Image (cartoon, rainbow, N blue to C red; front, side, top):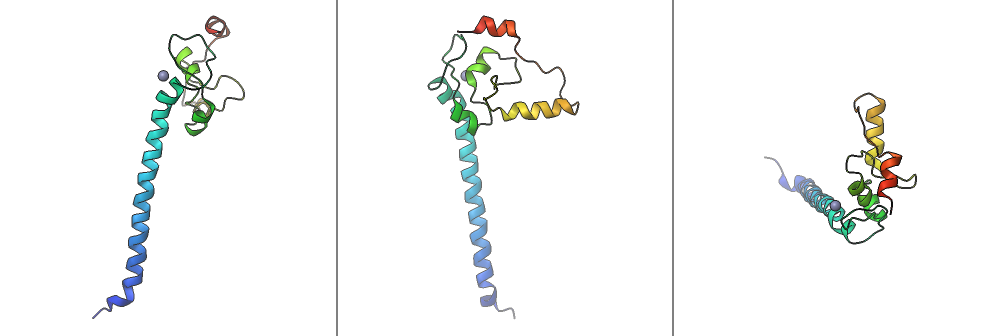
Length: 124
Ligand SMILES: [Zn+2]
């Protein structure tokens, strides 16, 4: 007969780690959705407007850090076709870095960026 008392502490640790894992997955999903929704809520309320758009979109640096570049929302609204959201050198845009990598290895083609003419037209 197997002595279950011997395994009891291992069962407890395994149960504890499983519950901790499930809790962390819930926290991860909640944080992910909050960051995604922040792009379309916070970035339409707070931040700087760099381009002349007809909406309330703003560039918000801290949302951009949390969302890997999606927080440059005024840039996105001004140049919807652009693959690059962080248009200034100091605007970190990790999505753009991934696109540049994919372009370098030949996976991404016909990557569109705003032209100087279009930037002049949209300038405030
Ligand atoms: Zn928007």
